[in-house]
Length: 175
Image 1: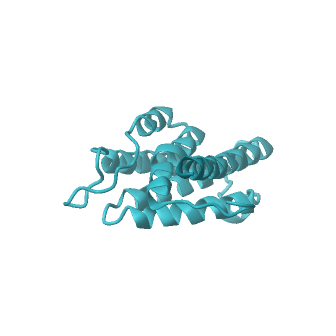
Image 2 (image 1 turned 120 degrees about the horizontal axis):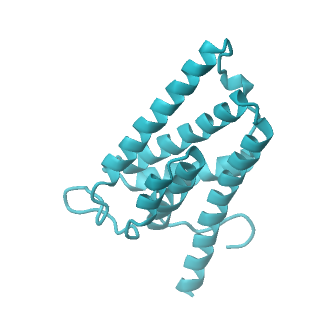
């Protein structure tokens, strides 16, 4: 547990992805009610014999519903930008904290694979990535590049800090 390396179990990563990282990104995108619902889920307990996630009834449908609302908001933003004669381009986005983003994505990929055969992890990962891009585009379109970039970078950093803290606590509990 020295330096950058942490021991992150599949259970810890799975719980963090759905009950911590995704809600943080939902807050970023303005989906506070969904964020709170996800935070109230019981801690990750693995799978049932049928492959469903124990204690997370409705989580898959909830994540997909969040994705639909994010897509709708994103489409509305794109439409508004086109009407204003300003297309949204991924190249217009400022670089967001690449180190924190890479670390968070690495753990998220680990978590989504650990939750298989459930698709909740894959869907959660896709949703929080989309929310990040949506918030960056919205900030750019509305002339709030600096504030949006700072807020998005802060959420990526906080997501990384949250999983690092969980790994440290887990390591301390094992001693």
